[in-house]
Length: 473
Image (cartoon, rainbow, N blue to C red; front, side, top):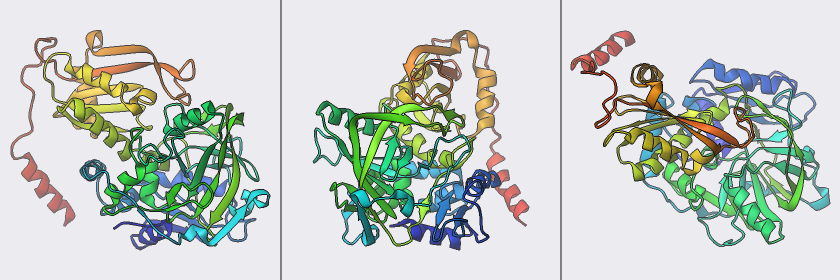
């Protein structure tokens, strides 16, 4: 089922028992964030949360943890809520094969019901803003899809970008945005500033569930997120033109904020409790001037808690990080079998592969580090044999325990780029990266004494089925 807006998805979550409505009155801080911090601890079937009785707010409606479990993530893709992690990644790969699917423009978007312009804008009148962690430097919008175009080629639909970036609220019509240098919006901003121009943007909040997934997907620069959304939905993604900047925005959004990133203007932003499970410090970041806000009547404010994994951000950035890396590796190394990059947005990547010859696994690991996502995120790459499931951590640990010899299987590559948020870097933005070869050596590499590996008994699969049936009785 393809969802055109957040509200229809929340209805499905409700019907599937995956939406917990909090009807008692709660404090905006710390109750809402604390509940969103707690709910993923309920496991892979954890529900989304919906608050509509928030002290101090008259008509606040806040949705949290919408993607915050494998059950909810499966429903977002139109799969049964019991679909497993590996199966969801495999289905993501199958649908990627249909990419691109062109979006369709629709009239009368629901977010056009209300508008406010210029000096009349006060974002605090529209959004029930709350802090997420007690060390945050202010209020944040952290689950918005930010839309921008390449200033050198503004008519290109391939070079436009839809991405998720943290945004701090700095005033009634002023925001701060962090453009990580590896991200497309940073390239758009650089080109605009080289021309001495501002960068027009649209910030969309409360999007349909697939838009949030693709906005968090590390696609290549000339790949269109809406076209991936169509492939994942199985139907063209509905979009509309933003009234001020004429940018393609999701048709079903709750709120559309338009304005510009002001060229060559920076202000201190942060700190913020990030997806790494650590606070980032204050840094000079870009400044957004809001010029127009369009919104549905009584909009639902969708927020996302970040902290010590796993939280919603880890589910949102799991499958959609694995698949682009898999697709990019597969082009160069068809021997690659699977990629698990679901840990902290791929700071650790596990790859299973067949091998052509000795040293092949290390070459695969090097390629991970040179993918668009790997350049800025992958700090450690673990390469395992094709019969090791990278989604099965006991198997991965077995490979590390028995296949990896530190004398020859650890490759440290010094002084490579990483996002500045990575806390392990001594110098922000630069880190030594590690490739761990946990594969069986292939000729002419003859290290170790492996002999014949124990294999599963032929009847094992039949007995799995039998035991599952007995357990279900």
